[in-house]
Structures are given as C-alpha cells and as structure tokens.
Length: 167
Image 1 (cartoon, one colour):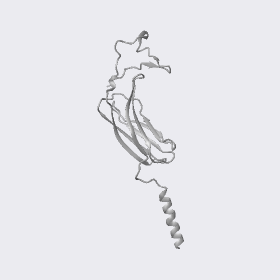
Image 2 (tube, helix red, strand yellow):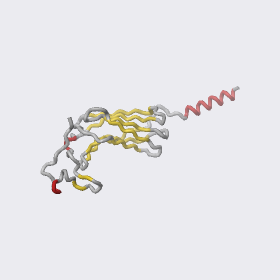
Image 3 (cartoon, helix red, strand yellow):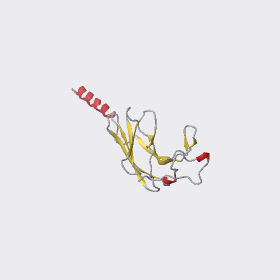
Image 4 (cartoon, helix red, strand yellow):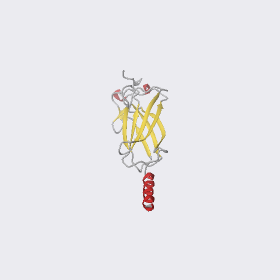
C-alpha cells in the first residue's frame, strides 16, 4: 500500500512539474516605436519582444493597436516558433498619428488551445506628427522609380503635398 501511495505522489509531482509556472512570462518587451516610411508614404507601429521562456508549439501572439484615426483597433496575430527567440510585430498601415500622444497597444500570448499565457499592455508615443509625411508615395515599383504623380515630367515639385488626416 505504501509503495502505491509513494508512486502516486511521485507521478503527481512529475505531472505538476510539466506545467508552466505562473512566475515568469514567456515574452519581454524590448522595443516600441512608430515607423514612418516617407518613400512609400505610410506609417506603422513596430513592437519587438524577446522570448524569455519556452512556449508550447502552436502558441500565438495577438497584438491590438489603438487606431490613431479612430474607429476599431487594428489587430495582428502571429504564430510563435519554438526556435525563434525574437518576435517583431508590425501593425497594418495607420494614419493620423499625433506628436506626444500615447497610443495603447495590448499583446497577448495564447497557448495552442487558446488559453492566455501572458498579457502585456503598453503605449507608444511619437515625437513627430504624421503630417510630415508625403501625401503620396515618392517612389513606386521594385526599382523605386519616381512616382509620376509626384514628380511631373521627372522634376520634383516646388513643395511636396503632405499627408492629412481623413475626417
């Protein structure tokens, strides 16, 4: 009877050791910023994270970005690969970013079964307004040819039209 009890306790201890401890989070935030691509006339959020703990195969990360133009938040879902230790999340294109205004970002790590393993909340702040961006891409195509809508007859305009926030 004692051997059966000891075996049961040992099996329970081993099973408990296979579960993820709640103390350490699997991802650590390492960077956050807005990326303004003036050549292609778009802006995005970019968030970088390092993996600090292994995650089960099939886990995902879901990022929710506040929409600077208003309306519904922008979401992005990416699979986490066990051998990759860095995670880079770039939002869909955004508009209407305002200088010195904090924009909310939420990142959730989900296990293969959809259970939440971690939730991070942060803000991203720009040091410039998006209205410094051109209204239209300056280049087009894989060779970065001058955009004929901007460069009439191949010549730069006296003043570039800048982006505006749609109302």
